[in-house]
Image (tube, rainbow, N blue to C red; front, side):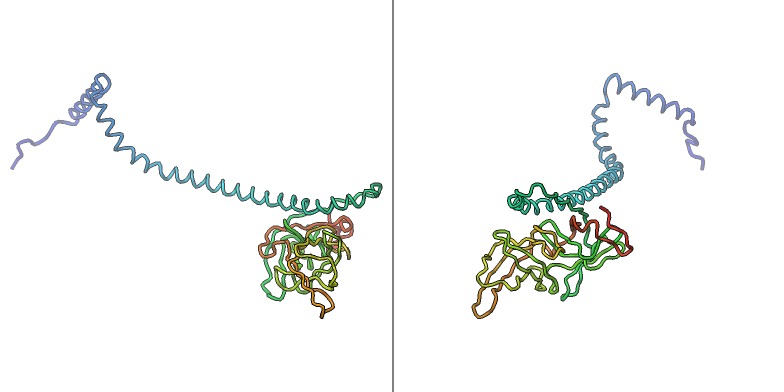
Length: 288
């Protein structure tokens, strides 16, 4: 059976009708503003689609900015920590220098003390042996590090280098049971030897007479005796003094000022008298 309408309008007529309808809509919209309300509702419907289409681009921009900001903050944080270590070393020495200045006013004509070279190092590993308190640093012979070199953090002395490799070095902490350091009381200059007890928060002062003027809270500074540690750096604070007349010496305990349980960035120093003497294993002098 043949349909009543075998074919519709031709393609040319359809295109013409669409063009005429478009011109009519443009005329009504531009000159008579008949479609303002429809445009408002259409925009409301299209806006969420535009947000969804733009979401990947905005997410990529946000991720890029976040990564850039994070990297910048990490670099700035590392730089600030290095500056803090350098400033802390100067502050630690300030009290000693003030005291020394009063004592040496009559020696103004003597040779000035050389400024120590300093180098910031980062802790690589911590020794897991409970009977040995040592850490590994990321600086070694190539950086001029030498055995016996003093190491400190932002609060005080940490220990000394005992082994040096090309690009790393091992540090023995002041609290290790095999370590000892000559100290003096900042308040009155009394000298003693502070030995490690094997505990990160405790040092013991050896052979202290019962009548020695050492009190709880006294600050202990490196005395410089022996030439291993430079004079005047904070070491520990006295926490207890116990005198038993039945024993030949008083029992004096102190707490290290360095935060030995949370070490990360440390400062290697070259005392003035050792800068020109320190040599690496390859025979080259440490740089000044």
